[in-house]
Length: 189
Image (cartoon, rainbow, N blue to C red; front, top):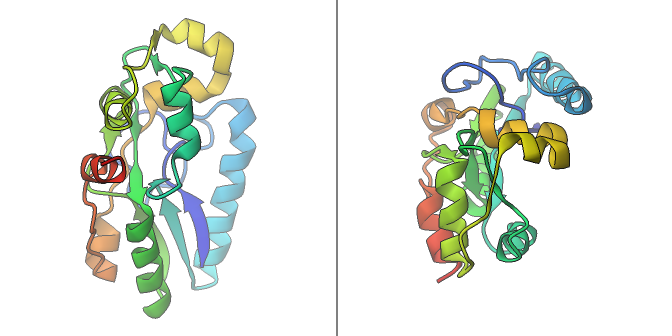
């Protein structure tokens, strides 16, 4: 069993990233390329050895987003460009449940462990701010953000949605939090 990533690793053109899609290494910038190539290598080795690689979305739940929320509250996490990139979330409880199912079933292959609602940054970031009692995030033009954050801007503008269909179908995975909207609201209630 290996842990992989279903968030910043999915950038570029196309529809939802399925488990059959390799993590794209050329679409990410040169500074991130090595990390994506390492994740691809781990996925390949584990799957070829008869194991499973779980691509987790961004974790949220008790304590998981404290650093992010602090940045949002201080208005240091801006909405970049049109915020058109997708981000894939998963609640800690749902991630743990998927992991247990994969171990118990001795799963083989790659599984995207994300909730049912991939979210454009322009949707989840203001919602997170509102849920956390913070002001709306500032907006930055893409070119300004690239000067400040470089390659990380691609996530905010070009991130792709990941599909969880295989995990639900093959592992029988049922989400307690099918949407980050429900989870964010509950976390900050």
